[in-house]
Length: 112
Length: 128
Image (tube, rainbow over all chains, first blue to last red; front, side, top):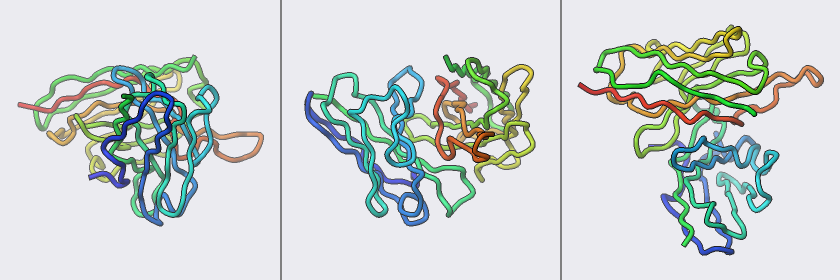
């Protein structure tokens, strides 16, 4: 069982916006601005999409945005494209264990 | 271009050992902490271990302490994970990932608590 809770799946049509949630506690997501998001395509290297809650690395489309409210972080993808279909994982620093970071269980995004 | 290429995975019997390697290129290897992250089949990601630039500090998730050892060779731009006393629960794809670096100009670490580059992983299967 993962430390952070994500929906197993979300879906949307091309051009639409979707949001993936990541729920933790005050010991991780809610207590620190160290939430990051990763994209996994089968057979490809995992890609950093968002770091420190809402920052985009160079080269990541501005269609991807991150936010946080209380113990829940969110990844929003606007203007959905077929290439966005992938698995997405959130991650956070935690003060409640010796692990460097903890991850969510992942969300499968399907572009209809 | 930053590249991380893992190798050394395979099938091993319970109780056995395996050594994973990660060859890095495209950046100054000795400037960065590095991590191993694993993903069991159909499951989420799990941070396993990380190591400081000079190898002087190493940290592990509780479930592998005493069984796994992370190391690096800065002269060879390589990261390693020695895995002993393997069990079925260690079956996973193992990824190496670039961790934080020390910014001399500011005196602070940057890239803390996230991984900006990952390899494609190497599969470790523990089974009799």
